[in-house]
Length: 170
Image (cartoon, rainbow, N blue to C red; front, side):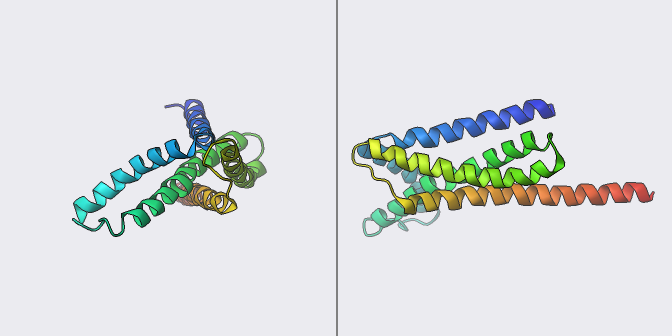
């Protein structure tokens, strides 16, 4: 896949994930709960397959609540963080060398904005509330995704630099 196509595919995936996050903010509480419970049930079934009886009637509500927060407010924003940061980086690095560093700052602000919009959208939905704590979870997940991209690019840049030095030494 060419570099230009890759850049646009990453951008399209980032847009899709971020639209999904925002649209989910408008879903009514009961429906959102059913969707989250369905997603968390997959993880619970996996946990009980690995360790039978680990999730049972005495702890299922706490585990389900934890999984809902992890999936919806940490992991999904983490995916957004990876795709959005990579998209910012791929587009901005072509402008000037300094801009690829700024892409991480732009991405962090963008992650906060996505978290705020998705929480503000809940003000319009029945049985949903705005929560700054959830914005914090969203930002944490997004930042983990951003940090992952930063570290991968840093490591890749280091190895590319070492390879170039080795090649020049020969």
